[in-house]
Amino acid sequence: MFLSSTVTFGRSLARRTRSLLLIVVTLLLAGCANFGNTNTQAPPPEPDLSELVHAAASQMVASNPDITRYSPMIAATFVSIDNLSQSSTLGRISSELMASALAREGMQVREVKMRDSMFIEESVGELILSRQVQRLSAQHNARSILMGTYAQGQDYVYVSARVVRAGDAMVLGSTDFRLPLNNNTRSLLEGQGGW
Image (tube, rainbow, N blue to C red; front, side, top):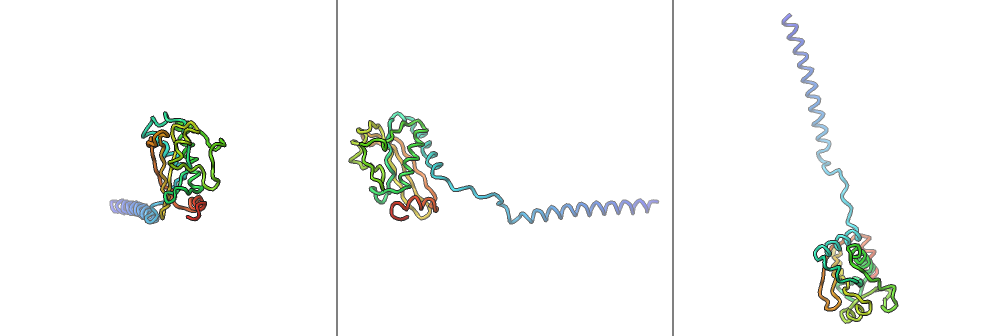
């Protein structure tokens, strides 16, 4: 009788050990299957120009909340840092997006394209040179002007924007950001005669 219960106990222990061993092996195999695949999530999407501009405008106003007191503002087309009389679709849309973003932050923005008094060169946009600042701000009753430049690098386009006081060109706020130089950005730059 004693021998019979010992044998039964031994078989039961062997079955439990095999079951436990099977569970451990299964877990190890499952772990090994995922070992080389630790990053199963898709990479985050590249930042969008509009998102970057709106974040930059929020940062500009946050760093100087009084900037909105210098309303109304007019916006100049952002220009190439390498040639201040040259712009592109990127320069024009960056200016438009920044003006819109600043308007959302509380800045009053005067739309100058609706008035006949400002000459707009079709392929360049509303370029503002230093000698024109006083005349244009007076003409549009603007207290501030949005200006910006951009520069193309190997992997990014760097954009710098600032709001200057119309009376003395004092910088009231500034911000900058970089945009990945992908096919979309290259397309926006093509208007300036290449990328």
